[in-house]
Length: 359
Image (cartoon, rainbow, N blue to C red):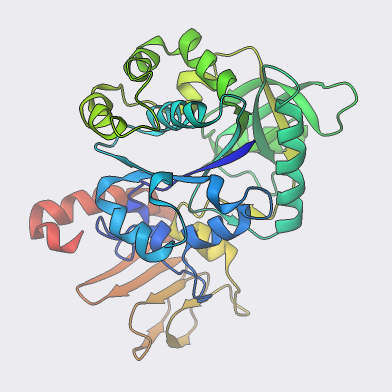
C-alpha cells in the first residue's frame, strides 16, 4: 500500500518574528485561509494517500500542536523525535516504522511547509511517481521546472531519459545553492531543476540505500528491528534517536546512490523558506508591495512586505524599497530583504541579548 510521511519538525528561524521555536512556520496560517501550512499539506496529499496512512514526523515539543491542528491523525501515526537530527534520521526511522506495518509499502516523503498552487499536477505527479518506484529498486525525487535563477534552492541535473516514461530521467548530478551566475547557466541550459525535497521510494529500497550509503544511521535504527509498530518502539527511539548522526537525506543517500531518478514537474511550487519567498508567492500591489494581516498606508514604498499579527493595527510607511516589516506583540523586524539570510543570526543574537521569550 501507499503511505505518506510529512516532515514537520523544523524551526523556521528565517521567518522570525512570526515563526517561533514554540510555534514554527508550518503551524502558521500565512495566507488567511484558516489552514496552516501543515494543514494545507495534509489536505493536499489526501487525494493520493488516505488519512490512515499519512504519518507525521516532528519534534516531541510539537505534539500538542499536531493534535490541535490535525486531530483526525491517529496517535500511532505521529512519530515524535526526541532530538533534532535533520532529514536522514527522520526518514530512516519512518521507513522502519512503515516497513514493520507493511513490508510492501511505498512511500512519498515531503516537507510540511511548502506552497503548491497546481494541486492537480501535484496529484498526477505523485501517482506517476508511485507507479515508477513500485516497478523496481528506485529512488525518485521531484524536480521543479525553474522560473528564475534562484540561488536559495538546490538543483538537480537530468541525465538520460527513462524509456517509455515521459518526464522521468536518471539524475546526473545535484548542486547545492549555486551563486547567481551559475544559477543563470543552469536556467539557460534547460537541464537543471529545483530540488523540492519531495521523494518517493519503496520502504525496502530506501532502507537498502541506508545500509549501503549511510551505514552509521542504518545501524542506529536497525538495532530496533522487532520493536517498530509495537509498544517498545517509543522507549527504543528515546534512547537511540539522539545517537544518530545529524545529516540530510540529500547528502546521506541521494548524492551517493546510483539508482536515483527525477520526475520533472511544474507544480506552482515554492519552498516558502523565507520572507522573500512569501513575498514572491503573495499578491502584490502595483509597486510590488505585499500586505499580510494588516492595513497599510504607504507612500513611495516598493517591493516591501508588511506582516502584522494584530489585524487591528495599521502600518504607515514611506520610502521603503525591498524591506521586510514584520510585527508581533513583543518583536518588530525591519530588515532589508536582500539580507534576509542573516535573520537566522539575528535570532541567535536576540536570544543572547534579550532571552528566549523573544525567539
